[in-house]
Image (cartoon, rainbow, N blue to C red):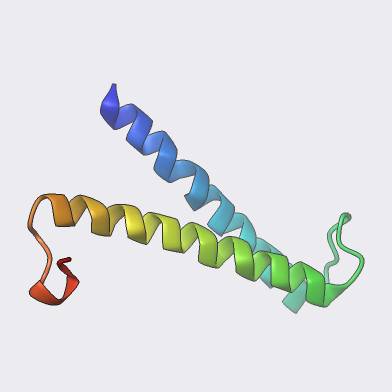
Length: 77
């Protein structure tokens, strides 16, 4: 059960990061999505979603590896 919950916790930010990439790509090709009135706002929201999702997944993996002592000495607390 813990593994399923951990998977769900990782899938949601991963999905948001993917949607952020899609928003940035659509801005590059000139496709404006409905809730955004300007291209730059759409790109900014996409960038924030991408960096937030990527940062969450990376932090989760780093935390897990720190608990198992599988990181280099510079990443240990």
